[in-house]
Amino acid sequence: MMDWTDRHCRSFHRVLTRRTRLYTEMVTTGALIHGPRDRLLAFAPEEHPLALQLGGSDPADLATCARMAEDRGYDEVNLNCGCPSDRVQNGRFGACLMAEPELVADCLAAMRNAVRIPVTVKCRIGIDDQDPEQSLRRFIDTVVPAGPEAVIVHARKAWLKGLSPKENRDIPPLDYGLVRRVKEERPNVTIVLNGGIASLEAAQEHLGWADGVMMGRAAYERPWQLARADSMLFGTADPVSSPDEALSAYLPYIERELAAGSHLAGMTRHILGLFAGRPGARLFRRHLAENAHKPGAGIEVVRHARDVLASAAMHEAA
Ligand SMILES: Cc1cc2nc3c(=O)[nH]c(=O)nc-3n(C[C@H](O)[C@H](O)[C@H](O)COP(=O)(O)O)c2cc1C
Image 1: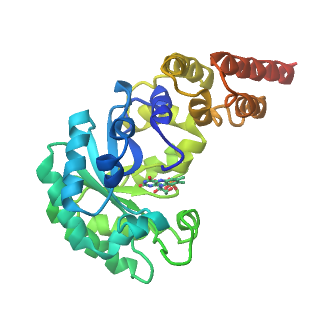
Image 2: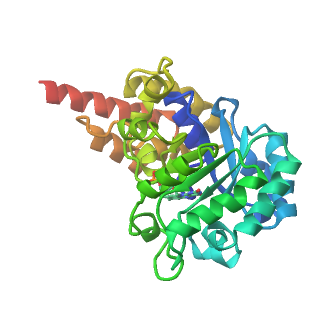
Image 3: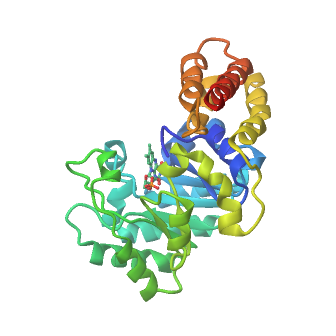
């Protein structure tokens, strides 16, 4: 998720779940071809299984970038056809590609020809005045012959004219029923459901018919719930059993990254919600928010935040 997630976030989420698939935020082909490629593609070995999400609409550029993804060791490369921001519309990629499924098919075919790792696509159910009953089916039926391994559907329209990107994630209503019908009509197409899935329980329910589920905001805002994903969804042991254990498991990563020159706040911003709902959670959050960005802030800021939390819990118990 652009501006929210990054490699620090993914390493933190890996403390909580080993089996789920993590996706990068969208990276444009222009940025990868002309920009700071090494920084944009960097990830830690523990982040696997990991997909790189690309934004673009030039088949040759997408093929080049898919190859970069494969060479760097990504497990999947995904094409974004769902992002509604203005920046994206000017560049003719993201959600506006819902109007050009033939071009998307060309893009996916070029990517598939370039790599052996799975190529997937993420879309909306439609844009603007499209009728989702038609636009989703037309999109899927046009792009699937190009061979994507999965279609991830954010189950709401995007209004490219008139709504902000943020409004476009909440205001157009979700239509899980349509995605379900489309899946039932096309049992051989792998369809992953996204949009408004707030808990693992909800995810589990959708998995009764969907091939997969993708969680965005709920996973970011309340990361602790990811800690039961491995046992609930994959039937394997969870890596940590408490938020405190999760924080301890993330500390070595923070220390390593500080030593490599990363800023503390860039890592701690992803853990602000870890203790949500617990006594002292607000103090933990505030201590990190107020101190982690200070010049030279080190691991002691996190340790102190943990002490603040522990003493709040003791006061609560007393
Ligand atoms: C801040 C933010 C940034 C996002 N960036 C991306 C992105 O880079 N690529 C993408 O496919 N979706 C992006 N999304 C959309 C989410 O992946 C997801 O499709 C959407 O939020 C609906 O799912 P959710 O209700 O589980 O969050 C972003 C969402 C947010 C809130």
